[in-house]
Picture: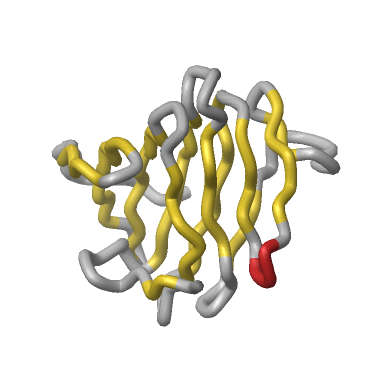
Length: 128
């Protein structure tokens, strides 16, 4: 078991699609961060990849769409991605295309994201 030796400091980032509350955590032997992303109703976290980061994402609540490569969309209802058997979430390796779109008429989406190495500004590569 790893023990976190310092009190994490939360940072809130304003994004076009909503907010991201990031909590960087130091772990041994590597580092990761934890973030709860809020995609506003009708908002979109556009399809993107990361060059070096691996992300583990769990949709906590809301209705909308998981956006994948080649225009593929998978429905999210009540925080559950269609076809998922449990709350284990999705793991995105470097180069994997992913994004989210919240329903216009809903509450938005809340997504727990664990990123290693920690997320850095400018490391998202947009995908058309």
